[in-house]
Image (tube, rainbow over all chains, first blue to last red; front, side, top):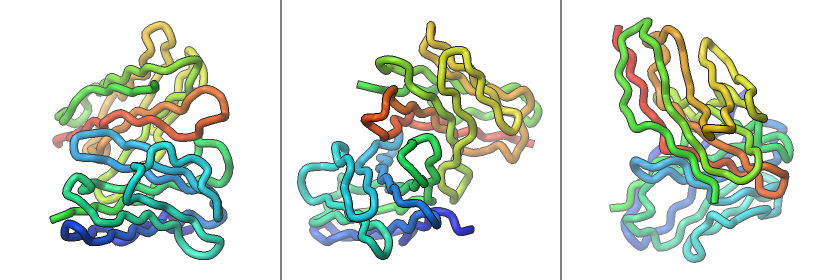
Length: 114
Length: 114
């Protein structure tokens, strides 16, 4: 069984461009979480989604960031007009149900903003 | 709010040495506590967990005991191997079912030398 797949592994963008990060959850999982890890810091929760619904976006910056998890296809984390402070590792995790005690993480996307 | 503090790394040990990675937390009520491990190039994997005071989580020779009185969940292993080299994250899940996001520490890198 494939695990949580994130792509790309590395993404380089110039200031002002858009970044799109993709996450395919494990088969059968309908809950997706996005976390961000800044250099020398722990993982910070961003958003929790179920299919076609945003359940908790309390960790998302108010501007430029958005996330979706459509009925078909991967979850997308979109960052518009990137700035250097957006440079970080972005991790996606999925779970089969509403419990947060069975999270499976992807390998992350390293975003570098030049 | 909730927070997790873990010792800074890197921790460098010789093979077969005893390992302790300290973790303390701040939270209301009785959170669940976790240790996750991230091997090079991979996503985070759940290593062990404890859901109530005095519980001991264990896996692959690693142990951690949920200490409510000291708000701690230190990770220990009696004899480390080179293959244990990784980054270790302590995390908590808030009590109750309202908020499902995990709060992570900043991670501790372990390097085991042969």
